[in-house]
Image (cartoon, rainbow, N blue to C red; front, side):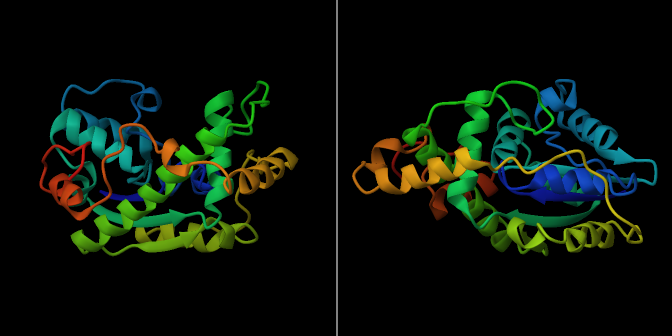
Length: 252
């Protein structure tokens, strides 16, 4: 069976791009299937997890898609003692897409707003009026940078081939992304426009927060706002992770 994994971090545009590939009905169903709330069950074994991901992320033509953040691999490792991506690639023909967002600040602001409001998609109802949170934006920024660094190191050490995209480059024309997923799944590129009911969530509040943050960062203590329980980003911890050992949360 052929699958594709989108390697990224939250608020990178992956939900929008996934909605485009999902709309074709041919390119799997991209979502965070390693979140049990999305999966709809709590698998008792890794084999159960793999079966559920393929079932929920699959389309009738025998392809599947899954969106992965670094924390998903950490969770799989801690819960089942298995590197999900490595084992998935061993069992199936997997394509890989690394998706980044160049504007880390606005990605961090988007993450902070969504976390505070619970408003993760433009289709979700509810007020989106969280208070400006300098510490929250800092923590999100550090998390995002760590996540992208993790993916690049993981892919390099594992010597895996992948297609690399930046969200900003796809705003005017997302077809290269769709074409990459189609090629890696050995599916002919669908014709026509791709449907989505999602809309751009960035607004004047985002710009206000960005300007305020740039002013505040000149006088605030950045190191006081590191993410909680973050494993040091170093080669020892990454090696331990790839060798199926417990991550260290203190000094290496």
